[in-house]
Image (cartoon, rainbow over all chains, first blue to last red; front, side, top):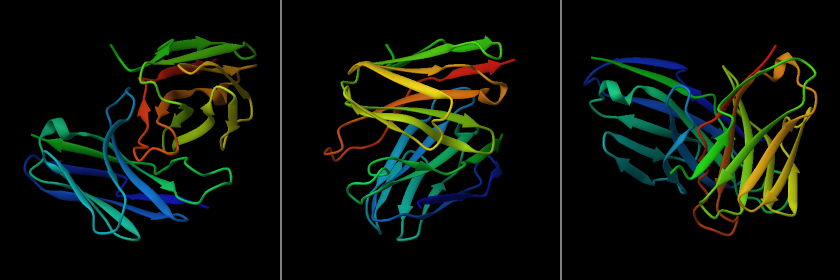
Length: 115
Length: 115
């Protein structure tokens, strides 16, 4: 069974204080690890897709990295507007079966950045 | 205009009532999904559809049904609503399974309260 665990559950930072969010996963044949941002009362917004260990992607103050067992979302010099819930999801790569192509989400990390 | 729209955005109903949530998309995607989100439980898949003639149960389909009226429309019905179906419901879309880009795009959500 595919599993995604995110830590910490909640993270409070001061503006400018860099940190990282963790996403640990077990999946049969990873065919994509996805990061989303979700603001309160809104739908998740796509940030990154990572496909293979060693891959990195960046967007403004965010940088996502991937290993064979986990992914990190690094936040450099965060601002209050970076406050949101960050979701991680994995897509299995095995063909056939009922889970092929579906995403399994973690519970998310609630990030709060204080000015 | 938003690529994925959901109606209604908020709904309060009573136990035993039948209710339908609607989703429309202008992204031209083949695949559509319905999720519910509860605090601490993350996003859980209710139903998904690979194309108009293909409907599949997700991990929590009991008490729900769906209809794929067209490529662009996917409706979720609660046949007889119960209080533990109170949640935030999201519709999402993605490209075909053969595409290299499988990120899901989410609608703004429907907040459903069952009294």
